[in-house]
Image 1 (cartoon, rainbow, N blue to C red):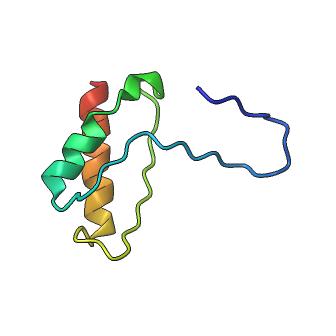
Image 2: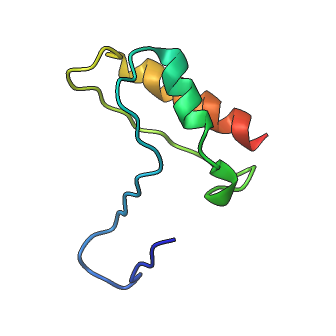
Image 3: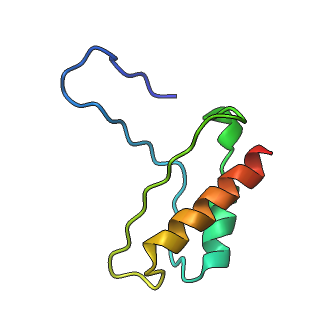
Length: 79
């Protein structure tokens, strides 16, 4: 787990790459990729989760669907 200086004035966000896969061309593959992450290591069961997504030159063009599907995969893994 990376260490972060909590009193740093450099920035207020930390992005951590949790998974990576080439050629995610359908929503089933995306769901499987998000579901494969051990979310219990990062969140507790009742912790509020907010997912932001964007899509640039991708076959998965609907950001709302990406967000919804990703959240479903996270919640299913935590329950």
